[in-house]
Amino acid sequence: MALQQVLIHQEPKPALAPNVRKAIQIAAPNFGQDKALVTLQAFVLDASPDLGYPLPYFNNQNELKHWVRQLTAALTWSVIGQYEPAISWDNVIVWSPQFIPTDTALSQEEAINRILEKKRLKENLDDIDWLQGWSPHPPWPQDIYRLGVTFLPVEDTDEEIAVIFHHTFYNSLNWYVWVDMPYKIAEQLFVVCKPIDKESA
Image 1: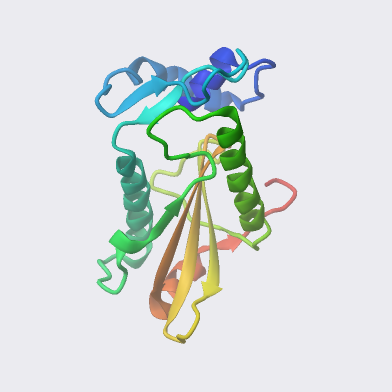
Image 2: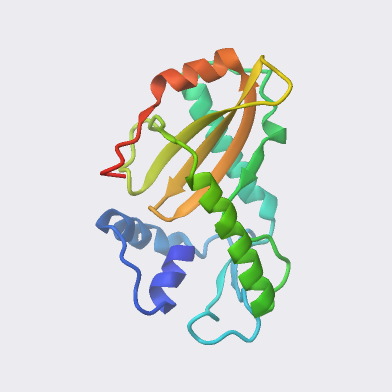
């Protein structure tokens, strides 16, 4: 829905892959079905016309993070093949540079400050060495969905490792999930990852 709003209102129009445009066209008729969950609202108060168009607002903002958390758990289960009680999925960190929690429209100054802060954090994450993750079944086109994974040490323990999942939807919407998990589980995930082809990424 967010990309659809950008396509409708933003000038010049963003360049989107044919698969992405087709996916938006297919999904568009269903966007208004659950107005109890998602509505279109102003993000910036008194914005200029090129910035003032409405964007999706989640009435229960935790639902979106919960869905991303479930997706990450399902992808992990698809590799390890069983429930792992040592992973506390309710406590994992879920974050997106494009998701800005707010109950009301923001002033232009506040909106810009939040956007820039998230942009800086994303640039730090982009500097990490990522591996190409595995695909859902059946696999989706890379410009619709792709998974990046990286592994980082956890302070004060040799038994756990931090696994960061990078979900990319439609080549533009990014969600990151930080999960501390036992080495034995992380090793299984590492085996199915592969280096990213920098020239084609």
